[in-house]
Length: 289
Ligand code: CO
Image (cartoon, rainbow, N blue to C red; front, side):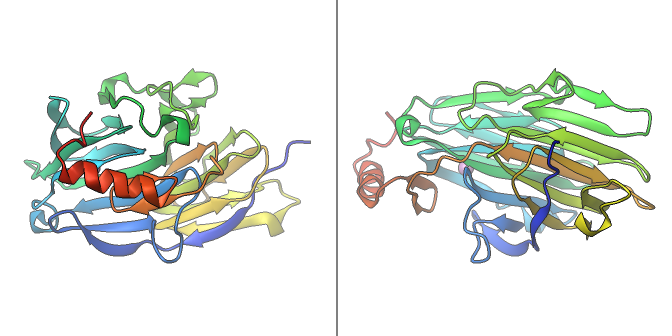
């Protein structure tokens, strides 16, 4: 019988200042949760007050990781050392593989109405790909497949697969799943996740019930209210349902690397020597290969 993954930890995001002064909520890369292999950082930015984000993230380097930006609302202008420049807006995703190194700028802009909101996830690269060639996958909202159920469930498949529908982002080493899930009241979702892969949900609206939703397994259910990051133990599938309230969450999974991690700001390598090298490369202007 397939095993339902149970909730093993519930993380309350903490407010941090990043970049040139952007207020955001962080739930991975904190004292509470250093990383969730292969995920190294998870940030939720969002505000109706432009002062919370307009300072943005001016030119900064990355090496050894992938940075994934997914926008709910508003937009971010970006440009980088490879000559790319553009804007990502509502529902768009940018999956950036820094590899050996890129230097880029990410500047949130004030939307004409509403708020600016989105997420940044860092996915680790294995030792053999840390110095790979940098690469961008930039996917417009209209290219992200959506699955709709009669009960009102809507799943946007950013990466991975849901009910046979493949995500827009492909060829990522960690074999990640990145689903944007909207559940009205009284809806449910079941998603198989490869055994051994790390899985978490980030509940950012409403209330959801995680774990086994069979009538005879009450004790294995966990009800969670936004905003929380929910870590799942191992198993074959994740079950989420809503009762009286709607919910919106991201469901993520990926293959752990089980490699040593040496991190220093925007560089994540395997050894301290490699971090030293990254710093020297910046100093000597040889960072971008
Ligand atoms: Co960046």
